[in-house]
Length: 285
Image (cartoon, rainbow, N blue to C red; front, side, top):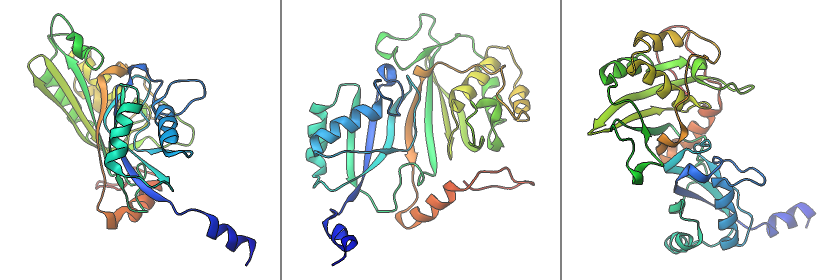
């Protein structure tokens, strides 16, 4: 038997699992693991590693920034450990700190990739128009704003941004990364003093959601016209006129995936570079 054959026989078989996660991002320096800093990925991988007694590496749907929350984050891991999902969820409820929860874990198809299989990510940005500011129990996830916002103008400004565009004006530049995205939903819902922006896209670039919210807030406050947001789409670098809204108002609320049979095709599609079509029409990942 060759050495390669022996290694293949000795290598334990692994199973891919999908994890559904929520966290209060206030006291985390974002999702991504960073040496010496408290991150969501770091806390989860360390805790899961101790329970499973092996090194754990998570792949996530959305790498949230410092202070950003998640109610519907999705990750995956590959492990040789024998997992009983219900028991692991119960055990992690006692093992994890109070600001991060493992809500569910289940076996996933081999082609499932939390990042590249995703077809849509949904965020909510929450504001309060109450004259006294945010309620104490909501203060870590709701941002106070002016009570006299023009919500009608904000909705018009948001509609201007829907579709496939280069959102360079709203993104912090990352070398080699495209800023072309398909914004599928951007609307505002008011319930009493709570004003929530719902933002959905195939993917988002760095700081894009908070920049979109910041730009539309400028319209709501009367500092810009609704047409201004459409004009920003003509820019090819980050606009200094766009204010990034505070992190703590933002939460990743859900991630959508295709049927199991379509996972491999979606993975390949997502890895392709996004480009704006030369003519009208729609577009893929």
